[in-house]
Structures are given as structure tokens and as C-alpha cells.
Image 1 (tube, rainbow, N blue to C red):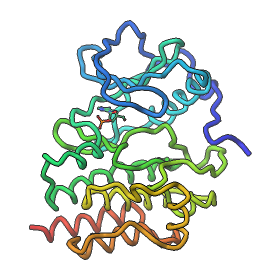
Image 2 (image 1 turned 60 degrees about the vertical axis):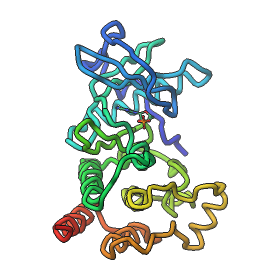
Image 3 (image 1 turned 180 degrees about the vertical axis):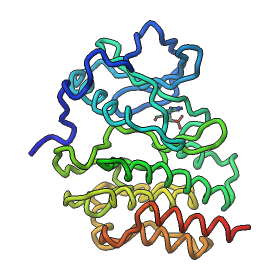
Image 4 (image 1 turned 90 degrees about the vertical axis):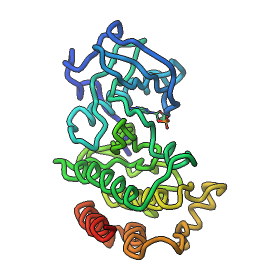
Length: 282
Ligand code: ACK
């Protein structure tokens, strides 16, 4: 079968208008580590940006194809809850993606910072914002499936709004791909773990894990080996939802986690249910 990330360079316009000359970028300190390199803080044309920079290693050529694939997906996306793509340098040896800088880092970092208090109203607001970004992806034509939704890939801007990011694994539904097992173990839907065909509903399952992260501020299946996670999910086990969790919220998490993808809600319904919760909180 086709490799899931197979993209030919002809998919990208030649001399693209989003190409940023490397000399225009002022690179600052490293702020994180990504799958294919590091993330640096920087400025471009006087604006704060984050720069995903490619590591020059053995798989360099594949990485350039990957970065161009990511650009091909994110170039079309404009939404308040999607991290804004600003441009990229795709001319070796300086290959990087330039995007909006999210001053408060990842939602994962926020949730695992014990000094930050998070009440239920904030949980529902952040969940709604992430769901709005995901709804936007799934209502594109063709739909964009993120495939690696988790709190690490939800960024928090300076005004504490959520932005979906990291489209390195994203794919459009019509592109030719094999149903390869991609994502992060604890967030993967049962059908993804089984390498069975999957669609947008795999993102809904992962969103359920994000909902769970928001209220537990823990990591799903922490300390489990990948095989143990696969077996647990196969047996129908899911991360434990605390007793203190409001009933409607718990019900939503469980619906996102249904084994049958067609039983899981779409993001439009998820948004309606989160909206009803936010009303009942006040
Ligand atoms: O929690 P963090 O500091 O926020 O750690 C991760 C790390 O890089 C790997 O993804 C940070 N990061 C990624 N993209 C951005 C961005 N656009 N703005 C700010 N921080 C970012 C993320």
C-alpha cells in the first residue's frame, strides 16, 4: 500500500508565496522538542513566531517531504482555534515551519503545572474551543483528519485561548493513504490500534481523552507499555473517570470513547452538549 505521508513535491506550488527567506527570521531560544526537530521562539517581520526547525539527520530528505506535506494541509486552514501558519523555509539546509507563537505553550504543560488553577467553567470553555477547531477541520472539503489530537498538540495563546496545532500527521480524507497506525498510544481509538480503517471519528475518540485530561490533569495509561494499552482497549477498558466528574461531562467522554465509531458524536453535537453544560454551570 501507499505510504501514509507520501507527497510529491509537485503538490506544492513552485516558488510558493508563503516561502520565507531564512535571512528574514530572527531565531531565539529553544522552547520545545517536536517529532522531527526542535521548536524555537523567534521573530519575523517584527512579530513573535514559533519556528519548527528540521534536524539535519539521516532522514533529512523524508523530513523535507513531511514538512511540505504539513504545509500543504495547513496552508488552507484559517480559524480562530487553529494555529496560524505564517510561512515556511523549504530550501535546504534551512528547513522550517513558521507559525503563530502561543505564549502559554501547550495545554499539556498548563494541565501539568500545579500552580495553575482550572475550574469547571474553564474546562468546558477550553474543550469548546478545541472542539470548534476540530469541527472546522472536519467540515473542510475534503475533511481534514488530524490523527494526533492530544493536549500536547493543543496550544494556549497569550489570552488563554486554545489553538489546534501540529498537522504533521494530518491527512485529507480523499488523499490516498494506507490506514497506518499513527498517533500516540494513550489517545488512539480502538480501530486505529487494530490498524482497521478509520475516519474523523478517530479524532473524536482522541478528543474524549483530551476531555479526560482536562478534568484529571493526568496522562492516560501512564506507565503502561504499548501492548498493555492495546490489550486494555481491546477488552473495552478506558481511563477511569473520577466520581467528582459532572454527569453530563462523563456521559460525553463515554460517548466519544464508544468502540463503534458510528456511535460517537460529531463535533457539531459535541459543541452543542458542551454549550448546554456551560449554561448549566452559571
Ligand atoms: O508546552 P510547550 O512549551 O509548548 O512544549 C511544546 C513544544 O513546543 C513541542 O511541541 C511548544 N510549541 C510548539 N509550537 C508552539 C507555538 N506555536 N507556540 C508556542 N509554543 C509552541 C509546545
